[in-house]
Image (cartoon, rainbow, N blue to C red):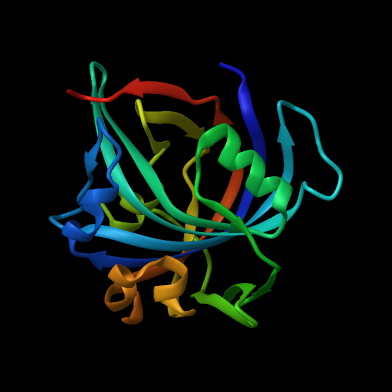
Length: 239
């Protein structure tokens, strides 16, 4: 199947929080179920650079390179070929209205457009990544500092669980939509510090204030890679 979108995702700052699964259950698309790692379900705030973006192979001027910050959790779906592990987005922020419109229209994803900026600093001792968005008259942000050099992700690790979900799911009236995201296995910097500075209740909902107000359970920065997002398919609601 031809890719709907191709791009590069780079410097993915991933802040991960253990969350009560009861908070996520109402948001789980029909036909999927919450995914757990060693008995824990996670909520992640992820900021990254979207680069060299093309839609159906076509580059659109002024819409190729931009930031994205999203809040997401993890699900899985049983198929004849085994489990498909995927991501459900609660909120996605990008800096341009046209990008948000296309994502909402074609994939039903919960995108909003806000002014954004970023700062990436690489050195011999590590990397720092900061992604910020302006909302309600002030700048909010997430920031992570990775140490040393990026390393291969260990099998069975929390970092593997967070990064190795290759499907996206969105709820719809008829059931849910499913689409595949292709990318190679990433390397990661483990973080010495990570912070989320935002009005969590206003941005994400009051149910997530307690969870996201604490320090993340884990944080790392993935180096990223080229990606391809395949066209969505519809799955009927389970009766």
